[in-house]
Amino acid sequence: MSTVLILGATSEIGGEIAKLLAAGNTFHLAARRLDALAPLQSQLERLGARQVQLHEFDALDATRIEPLLAQIGHLDVAVVSFGILGDQAQAEAEPEHAALIANTDYTAQIVALTALAAHMRQQGIGTIVAFSSIAGFRARRPNYVYGSTKAGLDAFCQGLSDALHGSGVQVITARPGFVIGSMTKGMKPAPMSVYATDVAQAVVAQIARGKSRTLWIPAKLQILAWVMRLVPRPIWRKLPR
Ligand SMILES: NC(=O)c1ccc[n+]([C@@H]2O[C@H](COP(=O)([O-])OP(=O)(O)OC[C@H]3O[C@@H](n4cnc5c(N)ncnc54)[C@H](OP(=O)(O)O)[C@@H]3O)[C@@H](O)[C@H]2O)c1
Image 1 (cartoon, rainbow, N blue to C red):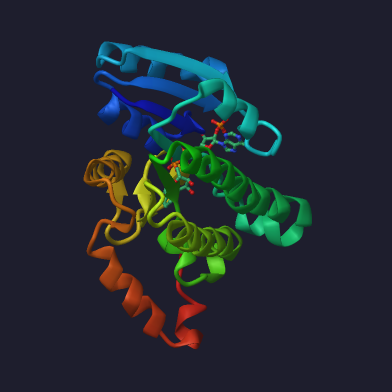
Image 2 (cartoon, rainbow, N blue to C red; image 1 turned 135 degrees about the horizontal axis):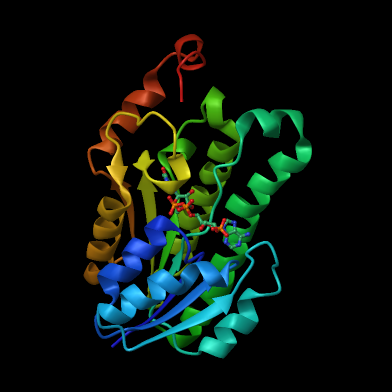
């Protein structure tokens, strides 16, 4: 029996991971819209979760995470799945919007990951799942604000994973490509697109392996990513999202 925390539990990917882990486990679902968690709560209960507790959580408030972890106590798996894509054009015109993307997708992430790492290091056991993205591998003209946060977060996760080596705590750094779903609604799917269920399956399989790892989802995306790095800048800057 494990205790699982989903930070940003209204996330489509976070919800799919929770459903795959449901049977026999205890859940702490943390989100800023508690009312939106009712469907996931009842699905998890139907799927055999032992207990599902809901917590109000705004990731932009850096004072929230430590009291939440103290309230939960022992924790086996933590999934940091909150995030925003933001609006690139708005971010270029309004510094406040650029700051909102950076604060949500970088600063709030490292606040949560730092608190989780300290909590689990003390336990001597645990798995942390963080979400990077192919968008962070090489920044693109149409979404470089979001992409830059993922590049920073990915670097942070690589360092965190090394820092926790030998502590009993694993870090899974997921690097999905385009996920057809709530975050990308209305957008044309990119090559090698996947669904939230595919991302959840890959993450849950890695949780079961109990080892730190950077996960390209789908795995073949890694090849595309390396090719992307070779594209000359005059061509790269003209590519669509
Ligand atoms: N979807 C993709 O194509 C894709 C690809 C690569 C990586 N990723 C990453 O994977 C992770 C999960 O993505 P997803 O597709 O599941 O996205 P999603 O369905 O849009 O969920 C993101 C969730 O984050 C929550 N959130 C945003 N700001 C928050 C805050 N300040 N406090 C608490 N919760 C907050 C949102 O809550 P509200 O409902 O309250 O707004 C939303 O439910 C994200 O880090 C994303 O960047 C996604």
